[in-house]
Amino acid sequence: MWPKLPQELKDGVFQALLDGGDIAPLATVSREWQTVIERHNFARIKLTPTRLGEFNEYCYFPLRCRHLVRYIWLCIELNEYDDLETPRYFGSYWNHFLLQISRTDCDLVAETIQTLLSTLSKWDETGGGLQLDISFHSLSDKKTFKYLTFEPDLPLFSDNQDDPRHGRVAPGLQSRPTLAAIERTFWVTDLPRWWVEQLPSVPVVTALLLRQQNRRCWTPLGLESSFPISPDLRSSITSHGGGIRWNKNKPIMCMFSAKVMKGIRRLAVFENFSEDIESTYPVTPIPLPPGRTPAYPVGSEVARTSLGLDQLSASFIVEAEHFLKACQPSWTWPSLTTLSLTSTLLAPDVDPAEVNRLLASAAEVATRMPKLKRLEIWNGRRGLAMLFKYQILSDGRAVITRRGTWDFTLDPSVIQAWKEVALERGRRQCVISEELVPDPSIIKGHGDAIYHLGLSSEVIRPISLHQIRTEHRSWPESG
Image 1 (cartoon, rainbow, N blue to C red):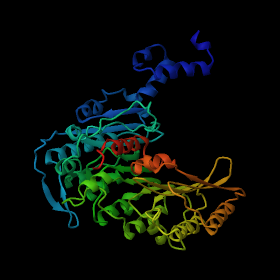
Image 2 (cartoon, one colour):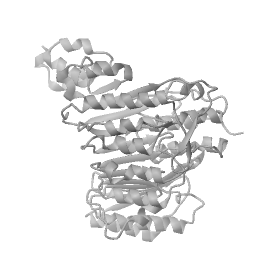
Image 3 (tube, rainbow, N blue to C red):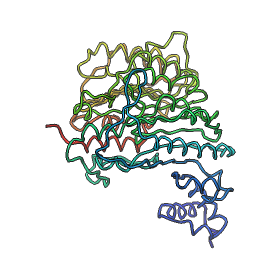
Image 4 (cartoon, rainbow, N blue to C red):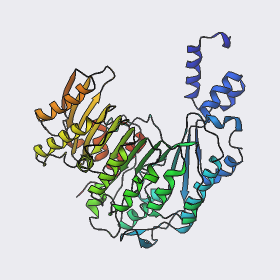
């Protein structure tokens, strides 16, 4: 009977089973069932240091299923620490003192990553490419920050926290954490030089994720070494909680060196911060977020990097004004299709004439991006959200959108400049949309701004956005 069923009905049955839980035993029903179930079960894999042995010996899954693997989450659990443990300051990067996680933990991270990469270096290409997601945390982090979650990347994660029916309610903080507790979650991962020198080339890895739940920092040396692990690395998404934040800009510029960016076609960098931490501890001996003001050299370096990209999203790590000023008149972006940047100029206390100059400058640069389908310039803070967006819809229309928590009128010259961009692409119809977010009080921070502005998914991974918005709501109110 089963072989005679229409394929649409079969697909419906398979989908219902796949959504229902553990279906591995059903792989013995037939060859067809085995193929479908194996493709589902082995597409996404979670690995921990204790399970790497099985993975390396191919006990984890049959060798014939290797080509089915599309995503590996390497989840490293660090040692638990004592609440009374004294922070350990060490050295400095460009004259800024940092806190270091224990050498035991550093070695654990280094050895685990190297072991996995050594195994993957022997893999043939999987066809669709392999996405490697690296994160590490300590269970002690949740003793203070009870709302923290450590989860795999979920591209289709739904995050409607404004709906009271939303089922995922994180426990809030009863009191503001001590400075020592905050410092521990942003300790630096100072990977040893021997690790850097021995990393193998891993052609099978085509995308690298370093996400928001990686609250601990990577040093410049670690970042420079991690990105070029694969000659075929085409996509990188870096979304840190403390992550790559230093008060000095030179370490951050290491991320965008020719060595690091070689071969990458899609890049998303989100430099996260916490207004709650800043307001609680405005002066600290280490660079707690937000801690760093974007500087022109970083914007200039990102602008240069963008010339070879298909997609770029750089949130808070650069200022859009710096990026645009650095763009030379002779530059062209032959393959760039999407561009998303943040700008502190998008604020209610900034002269509208200055904002319009920024948007006019963006239009001029966009004329040299022949494949551009979407450009976003935005800003978000507590009680503040604003977005300017130019987009080509699937039906061919060009749409210019201004959406935010306060009224801001686009200058006619700016609208005309963007209409000319659309006309150069053969778009004869250009729609102007101006929308107001009615209640600024719902914007608890930059995460809420992203959600209510409807920013593209390239800006930040959905699960990371959920974690940021959860933190907004879990921190005690001021007063």
